[in-house]
Length: 344
Image 1 (cartoon, rainbow, N blue to C red):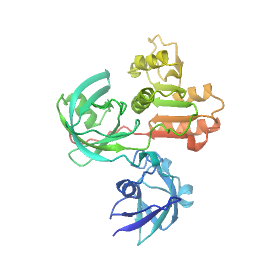
Image 2 (cartoon, one colour):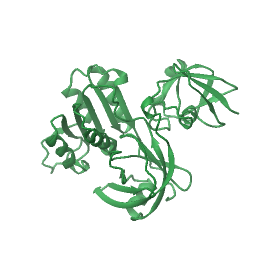
Image 3 (tube, rainbow, N blue to C red):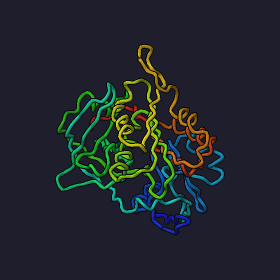
Image 4 (cartoon, rainbow, N blue to C red):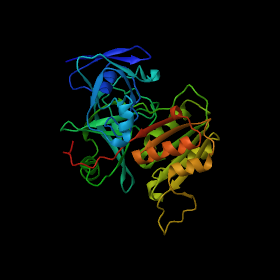
């Protein structure tokens, strides 16, 4: 049965369909609440239930503690309304994304390029008369034949949208990434839904920006930098890219080129496990540690982080200890899927 939901403080209302989470219904109706993973792992969509009752589908404990749950907080990506409603929630809506239309589209793999031994770059071509309107930093879900999904950030600027560029890491036990590396060929057909997510550079501030990426979390950061350059922005951008070894900095020269050509861009690569035979004289450790070591006072910054949840969680605590306000940390947390799924 349908349940009515109201968002405060905006007063916007929408109805949920049976079995639909609060987030799914809000996005379907065009109301853009903060979210990222959509599977209860990152906590981006966390908000308060002011009245009414919800139950939760399975989620990771780190995303919503029992104390937070007892205090009325919920993960909207996993929260189902209970009873006849209505349900009133408190959430911050993101107005800039209101005109973005989520589509389900076919696409063709136009080109494949191995950027590292375990990272493949795909260039996806949309049908001739289709274009995907999106914000730099958003992602798409590849739709698999069994109904499951695999999310990948769009790695190119919306201004250069002849293709959609994805960076896919080969994950042990992940059959989709295994399919990409071992079976997929150029001209293969895929279907996707997007754009999704609320990770993009906010344009209503002139504060200096720290961009913090780990691994293939570089993909949405790349799109953000490229879009900023296309628009002629001069807002200071300092990119920190964390990886295990030098080979994992798979577009290192591109980032170096940005910093060399533009005075408002800085680039700091950080390796957590440089090989004993590598001639690496740069920073070592974890990427969030490098950020807080360089900036003892982050109160006047905005930080955009993209990477696995463990990096995001560690960064939240470390950045807050350096004075970064909670609302000034925007992040895209993702887990690499390892379960065995049919090839698309």
